[in-house]
Image (cartoon, rainbow, N blue to C red; front, side, top):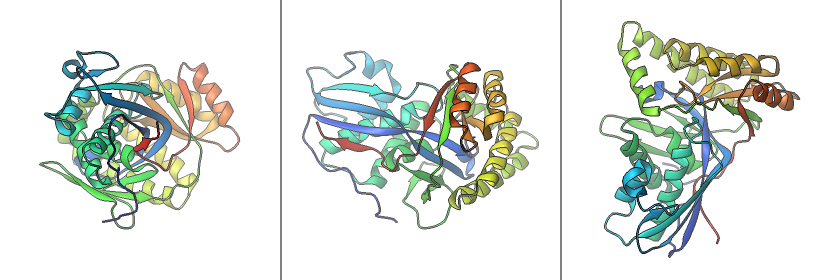
Length: 323
């Protein structure tokens, strides 16, 4: 197992930590069923500030431990039985947009609480963050949380080289590997329609269990495997082709949406390939711009009603911030 990434050191409260959002390039949904997935950390982040408090609150809300499933799950798994905390979270990641807002919050807060509890290594933080998010959602895979912990490009269930770490649940085991960043600029755009990851995952699971489902899953697997290889060698034309094919498969399993399709159509003259990213049924698209047409692509997506962001992969995952 790789020791490439340093762990989170022990610190005393107050502590601040930051974690990036993510963008799924290939393999969403199918990864839950053991297929590969390719994800990269984006330069939209969530930062948390944690200090001792008289009562445990999130952004001054004393009801958050009861009402916010992600906050509650993090406290249960990373701070159970310990003194009350005052937590403040500031995020640049749109919520329920398919860009990893929950994973960034979970990984950042778990890093801070783990630091206050004596420190933690990256594999353990990745496992803990996955368990927290799965505890809140009830379903899912570790791609989002491992990317928030590792930074950069990561492959789940695929890719060359030694794994950074393994993540386990009672019924699955996923290998997380580093993939070489080809150095491209990407554009994501939020439809403005929030989506439920849990609902979409369950709907896709039912479709893959229906007649023809195994063949669909095998095609998802092929596209993701080929996509991971193509990104690793910097082959833009193949990546673009596979983005389009991946979107066709996502349409077939029922997680596209008219607003997503409108953004994909608007992007076509300025993008080499575009697809939804994340759970779908709303959420966001990711586009690989034609070189030199990044600004045109942003304008087209904005005119079509999206909230666009030019994003670059960030190499650093969850980390402590000097205060």
